[in-house]
Length: 274
Image (cartoon, rainbow, N blue to C red; front, side):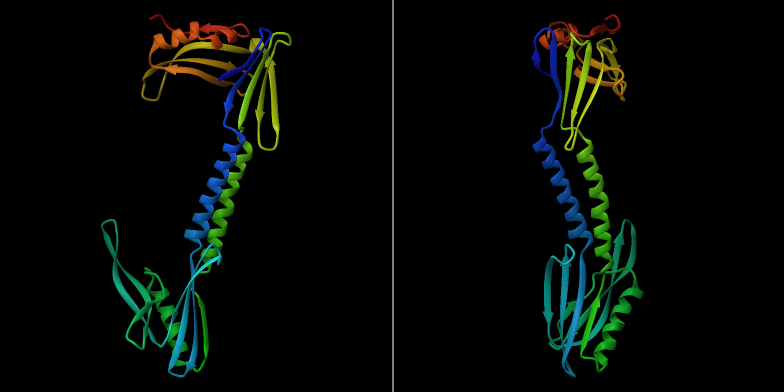
């Protein structure tokens, strides 16, 4: 907490100051992160398009797409002779299992990968049979989209996750201020959000400044100075925290901001005897 105005009758303190610019930076960073995962990892698709120039000469184009087709990598191959399924061993923890991949054999004996390694032999055989059927048929063109469903999954992921990112962005205040007034006998809490400003008030006798002992989850003892605003979500502002009792007691007794607060609200020393 930082006191930004004090004149004896009125005290203004800033309890949260992230900054509007920082709020936007965090939102944009996570939006781009979810976009990269959704469009660059999940929505990776592949398609293959073939054309018979002559009955024994087939050229194919294999296209890898990212970000729903915005970025493409194209591989052109000539002289496709046949399709085949390769088999290997995959590993997961301590287990082993067969994995399969569809490829093309060219007239220069080179091979070109069509699918990634898959655990499903049914899927890879289906792709291989589809290519073989075309190569042996009289059809002159062929088009196969291997995993377009990933575009839908990537879009759903990005929309859903970034919706929560947006809700967090809009629902998190980037600045909080409290205004204590002896004249009006109240405390006004002001929260600044992206789209609105929320104000809540309560009487000064509902507010207390406390010096107390607390225990964390590891049963370690520490000492704190907190400003309790009972009635506004029972919110507490931790102004000082340390495992050193003397350090916290000195802060309680001598810090000028704490002494200013004590003029407006009741101060409660809740520490047990040393």
